[in-house]
Image 1: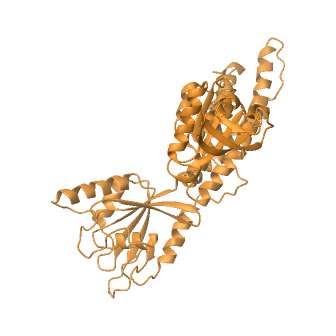
Image 2 (image 1 turned 135 degrees about the horizontal axis):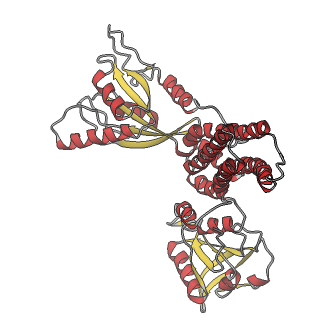
Image 3 (image 1 turned 180 degrees about the vertical axis):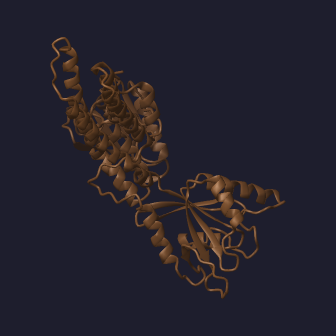
Length: 453
């Protein structure tokens, strides 16, 4: 379905809600200049100004000055959205921004923007492809240097360029097949079967490389869910506090102190780790503690990585280990033996042996966490990286259709059969970058954006 950009003009505040030094109100659409001119008093009409210029003046409600502002002018097609656009820099009062927005809407044919509508228009007007548009949201939501790098790579078009090249390779292959179908009666061969198989196989290998990057890309985009698990009083809350460098969780030698799951985030060498301190899993008759233990179980179910804590006195609970495996057999487990400062003759040992009290061995644990994050390889800002499940699914569908084409080729069926598989693979790649699209797909993607972006 070919979706066209709308012809109306939209307005929204582009800065976060709340009080600040500056807020920005932005407009995009054919009536942007006229709408602001209706309430703006400056040295020159905005409709008469050049693109990429800034103008000082006042926003007026009849004869009352609402605020003194700086207005930035961007003419189509050289704007973020590809349309005539304006950004109004105002003082950062929520009252002022809402009054200016209401004033412009009242005096002109302008409406409030929907979530993500500015970026959606940039996509529809060809300023960004769909993968790049999604990267804008990732850029806004980035919470570590690694996630920022991943978003920048995608916004710079590295993935889009790679996918576009693969699609072109596939179109070139398909064109030979289509030609042979057009000249079927003449039995003209435009490409040999072994060449066709090799070209399709090469595209599959390229797709496989992209698919392999997804496990690392998911870490880049979403971070790593880390759940600290152990029996009561082995030092789970102490470890959380140590990693956060603050007393976030209550520490006590009384078993069952932690009643709820505590979630905090830290960045280690640019990677985001989402830490969950859980209630010690044990049998309990107390209603609140039982609820905390159930939340611990749920945290384990969704974990990427489990820090399984034991101490030199009790080692690692076999019963708890079975519970962990039953709840989440896919999570990686790092065994951390705490309290090595205590003398004990038992030969307990873990993947990492530490003493939080004496700050021993914890640096090695941090190094282990970094190595876990990098286990799927290290990518740079020059590498195409798959960070989005939608992109992964599109690539996977393309690969499946190409494998079907190879299977059909090996069965010596006619070109009509494998040409349909090749077209399906083309469509899957085109969907990734937005060459093939539908309203519901776009609505789902841009609904996750903030209003004003």
